[in-house]
Length: 282
Image (cartoon, rainbow, N blue to C red; front, top):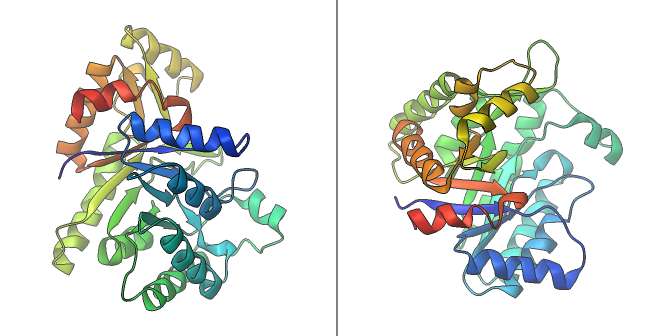
């Protein structure tokens, strides 16, 4: 499949700037505008509808909706409404939720992982039922075995998380290339078992740094990570892109060959700079 590029927009200043930013993303060659689902950020479906209103062809989507925050029936209603208001350009991202402080702030119980995945499955079932005749593409994102197996079996797009919880309790940490190999192998096995092939594989890039001195930037970021990873290891992280536009393009091609990633999303801070890479690969 042709490489597909998205940008995750997180900052809402006002209506005009949001629409201008959405138009710029389309003009720069992005295929998808996504909006995360975190407290303190824009409401995803509303923001997606406005992005679609400002543009003509770019897809819009949630990345990813925290299904533990919503009633499956009400969420499915919002999906159907958003699909209509965006002219059929909606892409629905689903996840189980992971950030406990946000649950606390919302007054929603932070249940055990299995319960949160159950809610994800129930939400997917309801969206599939309500939008059976014209369901928008569904992306399921995560890192755990059960979520990735569900994504491989039922999603149009499997989104691989580039981070995981540090088992030593130090918060989130990047997945190394070897850890990602295992996640991809699990999904590949499930896809084969299900007889599915036409499934996109997504990765969201958490750090994109454009530089003519890649080695120095890798060393700087290694120090920022307190030396937990060497510069060489940093350069191989699936969720990190550092280098010149040409070097980053080479990294994306290599990762497509190794992991199958054919859909890459960058953060809003990289909106303009990453367009140079899109121009090389588009």
